[in-house]
Image (tube, rainbow, N blue to C red):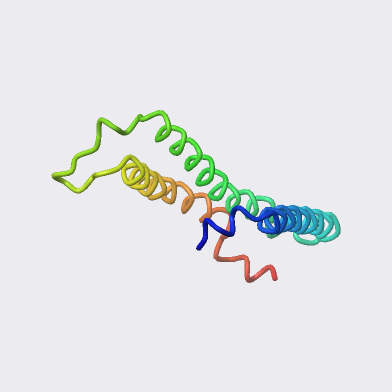
Length: 127
């Protein structure tokens, strides 16, 4: 039934409208964040808000781009040599997901160190 809907113009129009609504709401959210930062940054300087923002966004940034790179590697067939049905590694996508999960575990160690400095336990005393 899903493939029948995809051939209808209303389906494509709805997807296009949803995409633009999402982009517009994202732009509004980012603009609001910048305005909020512009107004309150001097008052929040002791809490190091930029370090907090960067440390959180770095995790999202690296996770997203690593998934893009791994998807490209799958499309190039880079993981074909690692397929091993005997050990239940049957597809390149499965291997790519395992690689990404392993990399995320390693990245989280670095992120935890960054978060330790960006989110010190004494911040509550400042507030």
